[in-house]
Length: 402
Image (tube, rainbow, N blue to C red; front, side):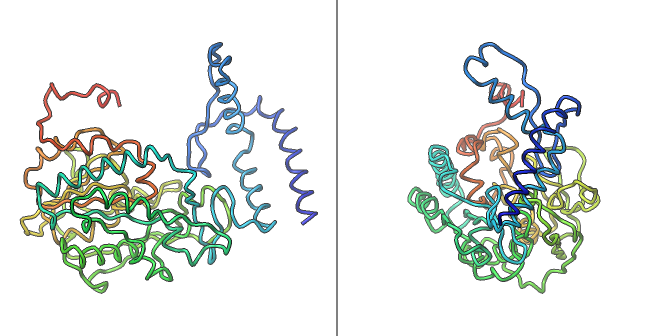
């Protein structure tokens, strides 16, 4: 342990002295593939911001992000911490069998934002229940990988089960049974490959177990056995967002598709674009180095995705969601003629406008990862359910300017 600490001290000194000289010579970078994020750029000097201390803070972030060979130093630092016996690095637990699990501490939550989101979602669900009936409306709250795979955690790890979020939401619903907490159904399968080791998303198998539980309990879809689907593993080299926080030598993840007969004749359009796709999966677009393999499902996220099928059930589903729904929705294509997916992280059209556009909606499903739901700052338009045509009077300049 003493030798490791001495090595870490020497590494720090080399970084400090050598980095100060190299900063002026090495061109600034805009993006870190290792951390999967944009890097801070040199801020413009402002006397006003300088007096407030904002300029100094921004410049410190710039120096940290533009440190020469930053990715390699981050890699070295993480490996040294792991060698020293650390079981949590950069807010990530180093779990068993190569699992990397993000911390979900309550202190990281904005309580005001959480309360606002609960009000917004409960208002939307109650309005939908009044319109379509309680048997046609449901909400799935998806647990974090850390909660669902608690058996993979180090012994000292602290968990927040988010029960207060579920309970607060239920208290505000006119029909509390519409809300399903998927923690228990998923924990029953926690010894299986239901979440990626290196990413925060669930695998297609995890999504299947959620679909099966929801279909059996709510009756909005027909539960089908696992053997109904032909499984195809298309990637064996997936390293996800959690891996980008702790660049450790852990096994790569596999991405598997579940094929069903309903895939034939499918039409997929994004954001009202004229061009349509005939598939739910986009392996060619996500096979290049640096691409997020999870984007194979529906080619990633956007505000609105419309899926038309050959199911001939006379039913249309409105699916309000985050990215966890992208590998879940293929299981629904045998139960709905049309599926309209809305992700409010990428658009601001009021829900009432969407309801006016799709007068054939018969069912409503909301799917959110609980942690991502608490962090979402863009759900305001979800509660605006009054049906209204999108006219010039309804023009939103903020939306137009992006």
